[in-house]
Image (cartoon, rainbow, N blue to C red):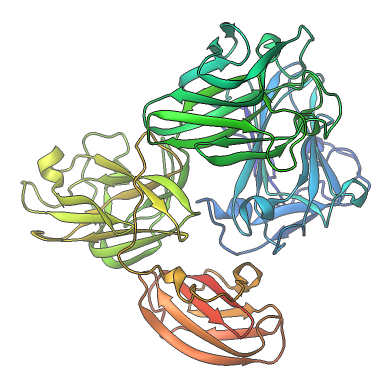
Length: 587
């Protein structure tokens, strides 16, 4: 059973689907009691919660609208009707659409009376206007799954708690478990569990082992958490090169109060857990897990457990899983066409491009059940500038030859982040005409924009084309660290030591339908402010200066002559005391 809450009730065919989209209108918003939607309003709370919405674009997702609304307040809660005694997975969706720096919004979240997020700060984790999620597993003893949000100052809260969307997965729709590459039971022998068999402890250097027979809460597999490796130690796990999801299992077997064990974990030399406190998160003798992506390039996955700065007592772990990374779609676009829902996800309408033309056909497409995905295209010499968070992605390009019927009639190149990934590519030579095919490659983004350039290239014939684009967060392909041959449009002026205030600049409307935008500038922008407008490939479109009399002043720019076409552009601002770099979406 999937219950997905973009916060108003929705019913998905075949499975009673709860979906809440926080901040949308609801019939019980102003009611103390609850009827049809009682599980959404829950009981009266001490402080009312409010809806809020923005039209600012959200990074890290193709579903901006899901994160552009929120429910916020010092205290509010949800009570979802569920089946008694069943285990559920809860997914919370967040994006910071108000705070502009760390510490401006801090709050707690409790699930079934147990705190699952303590002093949570969205901005600290991902910054502003960026989507992020938190996942938890819970067993519900009664008929209601209770979810409570609080930002009370007495508990360390600041401003208001908030939520953008909620998903609740029941037993019948819990996402498929990824394939395990390696499972180890730290500090113990081989063990068969409800999720698979864990091998006996091995590949460890340093540390000691400990075991208990105390029952462990929040799990059906007590024995998995009743042993541990503790101390300062390292695991060197032999795995093929690739991107993995590493899941660490913990339960505090010795201490009973927060602050008595605090430690750090690093994966492949990168800290993934800092000042980690098991009791603070879950309590003593209670199972909990932490999951993070890791890329391996040398055939060995290294996990180092150490006290770290501010460490107390000794690190520990109960079990380790190395799972094949399941790709998550960060962005899906249907080139040359409108939005389309397919069997493997929703593709947004064509956007973020510069150049080229669109074409469509109604001819059937072989090699796929999703004919419509391949029946449109963008063709010509063109560039996609996709706004994504920095990181390593798998890019999947979808092709079908809709016009030519013989090899050699269309040859072209594709470059990702300045590195050629397809050269003299010939769709018909690979699969024939009117037949679907895909090409996947890995690319690393360092400036917030994933650039895909389609050009004839040396020896090119006719014009490049593409039917659809997917950007996936993790894949089985080894990553390629790409470098741009020219400076990134986001990097202009970065050589100076001026503070950067990009997150504090408010830009609206964004997207802009006519090229006119208004900016609210922070106090650092007073006096002469220079600006430079550039395209997604770094071409300067406009330059000038504006005089700002006081911080917080609104400044309006009319870029309609410079932004005649839809696409992604960058505005760089520089004043005596600071600089900022903001994205403008022209639609």
